[in-house]
Amino acid sequence: MKKKYEGMFLVDQEVSNKKWDEVIGHIRSHLEKHNAEILDLEKWNDLKLAYPIKKRKKATYILGHFNAEPSSIAPLRHDLQLSELVLRHLITVDTGRMQFLVEETPEAATRRSAGAEAAEPAAAKEAEKTAEAEKEEPSEGEGEPSEEKAEGEQADAEPAEATPGEEQTEPAPEAAGKEPEKESTGE
Image 1 (cartoon, rainbow, N blue to C red):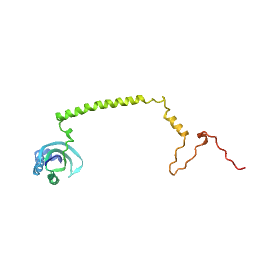
Image 2: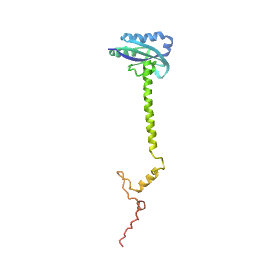
Image 3: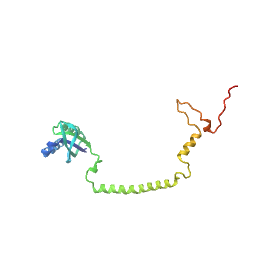
Image 4: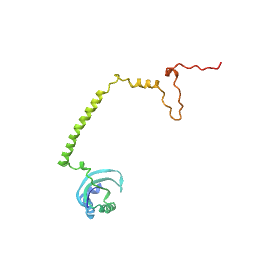
């Protein structure tokens, strides 16, 4: 059973500018040699490469879609690696996730707009819930003590537990609201 594939082919920019028909014919011949049914093959961009490939600094990107038997992909990749004209290639199974690059069909536009309309009421309900929650919470200074007071009161209450390796110290008697105990000297 044939699957749909997407192929990106990098070819030398100078060669593609001078002999475009030969470059496209070369890629087509490799695909047809491996019984691929070519759906489209189009020039994408001429770009400067991040690093030289086969001593070339610029390349032309060619994007193609084709149907082929999964068993024919490995030999196709091997042939493309041996090609002097193709600098690099990438062949992947076309899952349809990159459809935003292709012209949108009327059915897809209808689905997308229906999805956006369904999302709007949900967003409005979420905004209402947030507004109601803000109304129920008292504003600062009303009802509850501020965080600073709460932290200060907590420090007067009980001392925090000591972490391992740290000694527990008694709070100063003044802080705990107790009078200092006098030590007896034994006299």
